[in-house]
Image (tube, rainbow, N blue to C red; front, side):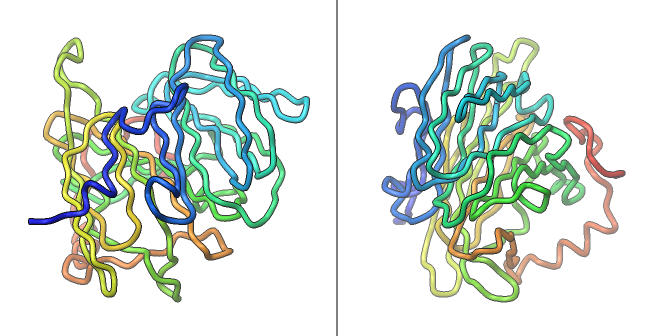
Length: 298
């Protein structure tokens, strides 16, 4: 059976351009808005970034960083791992030149979208990243918003990350955001995955599964295994589940952007599965959550 994996699934390392081990652009996906670069840096290593027509976040994944812009230095504490804590981060508008220096060897994400308005550079403490539970039972996961439904003002960029315990289904029920109306916003979306190894010494490499399928007027079929460093682009259609294999906790970073000017995330569930949200009210959250503290009472 034919599918669209070749166009929308980017396996770890296949888009690498030194010093980035992941480079997702509108050109290599074939869309208009979203991009993602992930820099793998040694301790003290610096890179230069020109934002051009894009706005972006400097979002540490496994180190801290110094960020120099227009003669001012911003100090990001960062974090040890995406599974251990949320992080402080920086919003940078278009038309800026940036020097980014890693405090220690590690990885830093640069999620971005094309911008049509200008906002100030903004340091965001970790307290501004809002983390909360979503779902219940086998659909339990933890969502942390960095530029989505919080105080961070952007032109078109929406960013969150999701942590899913091994064996659970995330990005579920399957949902879409490929129209602009009162119930949805048209948003391209990038999923970047990391899977936590299992075993006492992390000797067992894990995996997950990701699906995208057709919505009205949009034909697409993606069904793929995902491992650490893999990226999946969602141009349209219903997407989900993002399923974590048993014993392997899953992380994914979501980058979204589209033509609407209100920087709002609105989506529509697949009607065949939307009933499950009501069923969650009768179920308990997975006891393995949170990975790190929620910002609301569970």
